[in-house]
Image 1 (cartoon, rainbow, N blue to C red):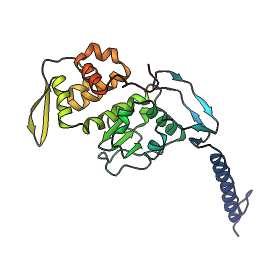
Image 2 (image 1 turned 90 degrees about the vertical axis):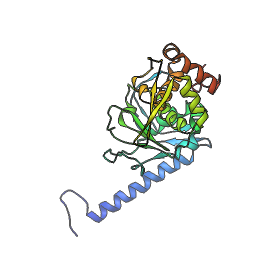
Image 3 (image 1 turned 30 degrees about the horizontal axis):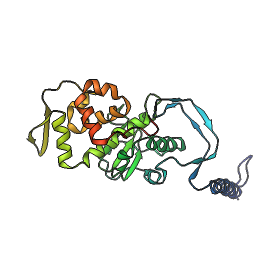
Image 4 (image 1 turned 45 degrees about the horizontal axis):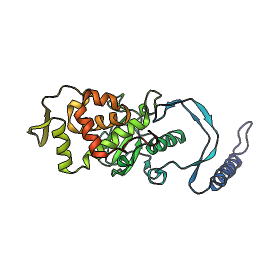
Length: 261
């Protein structure tokens, strides 16, 4: 049998690590089994500083393993957290990244803070990628798929706000033709014509947007305006009051972040 100085035989090393792995995962599973119904096991992990949905800053720390009460929507969203590269993703040059325990817990927290209307969209998966082709863009979406990049988890980002914006793109895609037309008419969007099979839109009598990229399409404008309705409503009222009024009528008085007054 081949030996190495200062080490056990290879076969014994393999056996040792296999046994350690069995013990480790058995311990983890035993702890997980102790979690009561309606809670889930969280492995120990380092946590970076970040901003919660309500704007409260959470400091960095080391989280010990524990059982945690499931946040609202946990059973639905946990199964939508996907590793690997999304099969329908058009940007083939972007790279996938495996979710960390910290990121999954933050993701589920952020989703639980959003109003139910945003969570009814037909999302098939939320994927983790390294860096956007349009850096520092924190997230992107195609029908049914949301991708979160490294920058979404920066301490300068509010993850709930990032997710709300992407879910609003999905929401807009699912609106009826009449509802989408109602929004466009209220916010002064007009069909300019078709070119290369694509519809072109322009705004008339309107020169203020909460974000400059809202000028590119009614879809982007909608996502920006509803995002601001939830997170910076006063700015939306000042900048685009007709949009603020439409959103208020559309979603009703209960449309707010969970727990917000």
